[in-house]
Image (cartoon, rainbow, N blue to C red; front, side):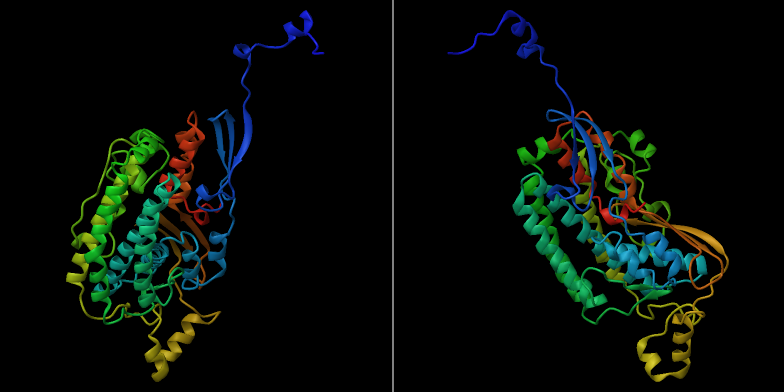
Length: 409
């Protein structure tokens, strides 16, 4: 026989309409397919709605800044590969430029043009996989497969030039590891001839896709004032309507000699960031084509034997070059930079990548401080997702293109 509730029990049991919702603490990450690396967010949710978000900075700790204080200027190049492993060439080039500004070394024109070409190809590699993974997170799996194919083609070019596909370690203080192979222009042009069609196909797949737009339009919105206040740069800032690009604001290498536009949007949401990256890929193709046309002949490294490593061919046959190589690389000798400090920045795929170096005149930096763009992009995540659904957090995080290796603090 079923028990009948007494009047006292009826008064104690709340009605469905009177039930009080209660928030719950949970983790987003650190191991989740939509986290794009070892990221951890402590979130408080009320049902499906995020009411509070606390990102944990530096959950993946590598200590790359401290590593720079125990390695020579050239040895630290290999550490820069591991910061943003989706665009290591941009890290290599940005760090080398900072060293050269500190030492007062000028890279010859051919070396500058090759650096620009490789930096823009690396931007293509980073942007295309970022767009593909953003589509994958929102259910567009085919677009991700297309973008991985294009990245592999770029990796073939990187391998031919640097000898590695991912951790390239291509630059040296005063130049690069070696000149490009003879068929390099043909390899790059063959890729550029087909790549714009892939951009068009990705746009056909995503730009007017109802599901993709429902998940991105109006999601993660930031105003221009908020973006500037948070120190954002790169595609996130330009998607808010601010046309800031280090290649124009603080020109370096041969960028002043090349024509390109700065794509901007004004919506400041996830969809706007996607559109900015798509247009930036077209501009990178434009830059590489012009740089190939203007690519000069000549040396790729500065003619400063106290700073720049001689080529292996010269080391093997020339005693003087062997001595210079020995003096530069051996502990207790090495490069003797002037005492001073420098802050240098370049336009990496995710924004302004800055290196602050302090020299005490020895062969290793006294202090290394890095401004990685992912660090600034990451801190805006609570602003974008508070009050939104958990599914919107996945969309917003994909648009940030955060690389956890840069968040070391």
